[in-house]
Length: 202
Image (cartoon, rainbow, N blue to C red; front, side, top):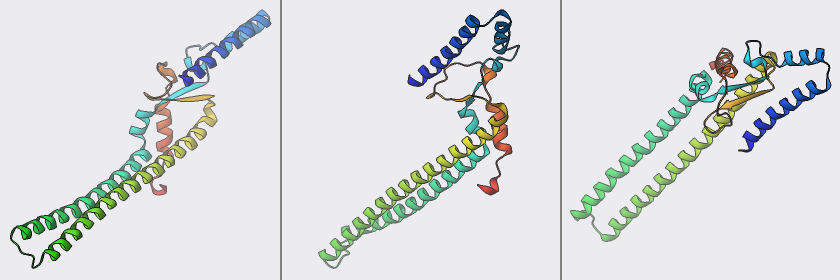
């Protein structure tokens, strides 16, 4: 809601500037001022703003897809490691239960020692699962920051020529609810990003 207020205030500020120019300049200057804010067939000439559809951008940005692949591989490796150890532990537990049923342990103390060993092994496996999940989350956060830094750096390079004053992000959680498609520069940004992305330097 606060972000929407910023947008509305920005539009109102532009309107106030136009009214100020119309009120305090002569007819000749008024025409020039109006011409400055006339689109002449190009709506983006009206205001130096644009927006990017982030969902579409990320879906087609090669760097993002490569980062996603790295995360998915690490997640698969972690899950495979845990599943393998869990399967082995389950086999040991079943073997222990079978021995208990068949009175295969020489003493009760030996059976309790084996039970304690299996319980400790299960606790260690749970701790490993939690540690791998935490490491994966930290890695994902680090890669997300790398992606954000890459996007911001490339947007600055891209905007050096275009000179937009504001570039919004269009997502369901962001401030844009409706905008003219002419302000959508997603394809241009995506083309710029992918042209400047070198997989060998990731």
